[in-house]
Image 1 (cartoon, one colour):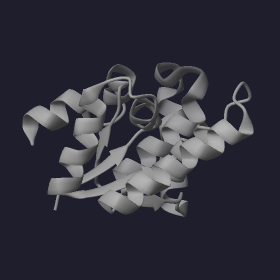
Image 2 (spheres, one colour):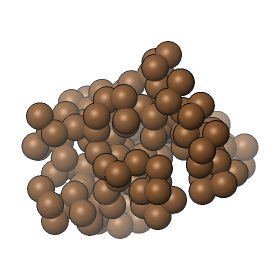
Image 3 (spheres, one colour):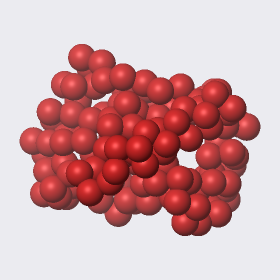
Image 4 (cartoon, rainbow, N blue to C red):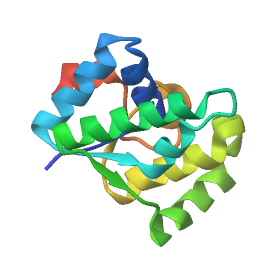
Length: 141
């Protein structure tokens, strides 16, 4: 079975209705495989410059789409933590200022043997070979 892990960038695009490709990729992936969202991506929605009520509404929308499409929220396992440490040691300069949450999300995809769907393809594809843009999900599957 094909597995997909959606990055925070895909969730933000979905929430903000920024592009149809991200939304289409979520629905396409959920039709053909098992889908995941890392709890780290949920946590990344909490930004200091956002009102708490706005964030809570966004988080509820994510949980609603998860229920609707049978997407599972996954937590960081000890194995994912170990993989993330190695990613940070070897690729921190590629991932930039958000290297810790990004490494945790990437490591979750690696451990779950999932394609990671992200808008941050460039940096992430240097770390993990199974990274797809939303457009690639639509085109390939």
